[in-house]
Image (cartoon, rainbow, N blue to C red; front, side, top):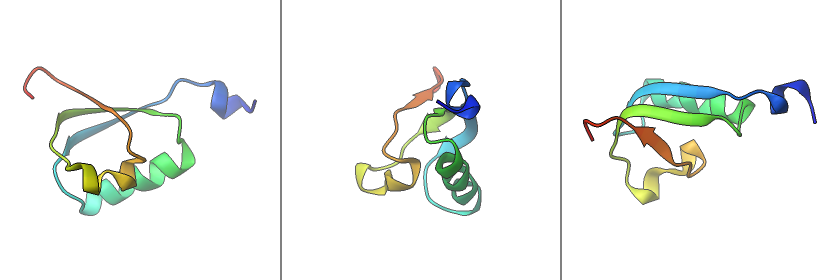
Length: 64
């Protein structure tokens, strides 16, 4: 196991609603850290659009 794989990594994003600029950045970060946990204010992505986040579960806030 590499040192990076042993780290607990969290990616925090404002919201998952569509696929545009900042979501492309999240996609690239997930390519580097595929084991990272995802957190966001809300997650309204349709199942058919979840590929870029590796179909990961997103932990959301009470607002959702």
